Image (cartoon, rainbow, N blue to C red; front, side, top):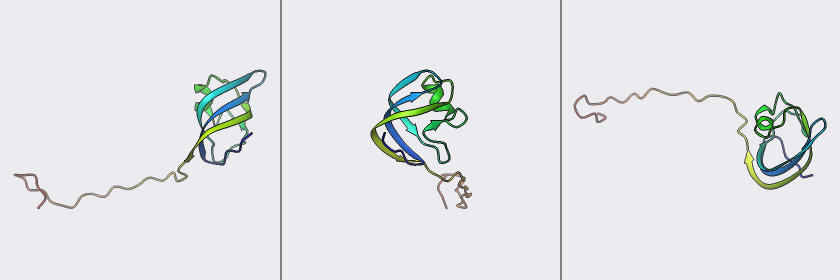
Amino acid sequence: MEEIKEGEIVYATFKVKDNNKEYELRKVVFSREWKSEYPILRKEIYVRFLKQNGIKTDCTILDVKILARTGFKNRSKGYTTAKKNEQVRDSVTGAYV
């Protein structure tokens, strides 16, 4: 099984197992969360990924074949602030004065 680092986004084929059934997810994009119990995919954390692939419960990754490593997620969750434009427009032409 190939290793996926925290926050990494990969394009890969996965073999996962839930309570009693094995699934093979071919050519999917997967993004590992910063704080997770990898290789266990918890429903609370990976809700979107599991729902898109038709898995209804927590599951465990058995095998990973990485096709491409696409990069890392942006860790900061902050917002940028907008600054008001202080230039004055001409009322007739609309050009900045």
